[in-house]
Image 1 (tube, rainbow, N blue to C red):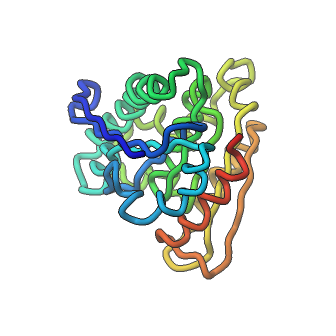
Image 2 (image 1 turned 90 degrees about the horizontal axis):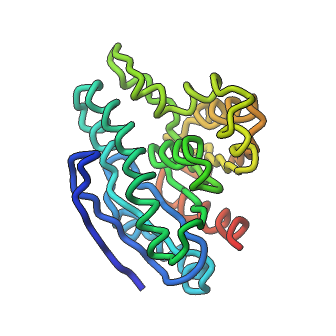
Amino acid sequence: MKEETAWYSDRVEAWIHLSRWGHFGRPVLVFPTAGGDANEIERHGLIEALWPLIDGGRIKVFSLDSIAGRSWLQGDDPRHSMWLQNRFDEMIYREVVPAVRTDCQDDDIALFTAGASIGAFNAVASVCRHPDAFEAAIGMSGTYDLSSWLGGHWSEDFYFSSPLHFLPALADESGDLARLRSRFFVLATGQGRWEDQGETWKMARILGQKAIPNRVDVWSTDYDHDWPTWRAMLPLYLDDLAD
């Protein structure tokens, strides 16, 4: 039930690897952590944790390489990382979404997104920027504020990539804001080691100020910023959201 495909994207000047698990159900695009690839979620047991939903035909899971996240992680020039983050979003919308819809044989189907750490940033940003293509986001242990990585630099690429920064200026008469108010965001965080609840609450406040539906779930101190936490979280939330 697994398929892999790849193509070269001029937008990000890199090869895109897209993996898919399952044949039927709502498509879920799971973004990897900063250094991850398309198969990271399988290696860390997340696909196994989701298997009852996949095998039951309720979801199809897609994942790809963390191209922009790797740039931030490896300390590239922040100006390049900002450019790449914005191009990565465009590639998701212009290339990955059509590929997923073709796989689903449905040109209009809305995707769910999910991710942990910087993957949560990408999951939330994708819905915020493209509510015409995405219906809901599940952010786990999110790293939502990347401004500390800018090294004193700033650009429109970063501004339009970061929901914490562009959402406050989104006008009430904006069609995107009206559509966002029909979308839903789950923001989950543990209280264990390496977790930073402040990032999650900061993202929730910005969404709430714009009357965008969201829910914060704070898990106990037993849940660290690590894969066992995300294996517990994601099946629960997708079971609630999937048709």
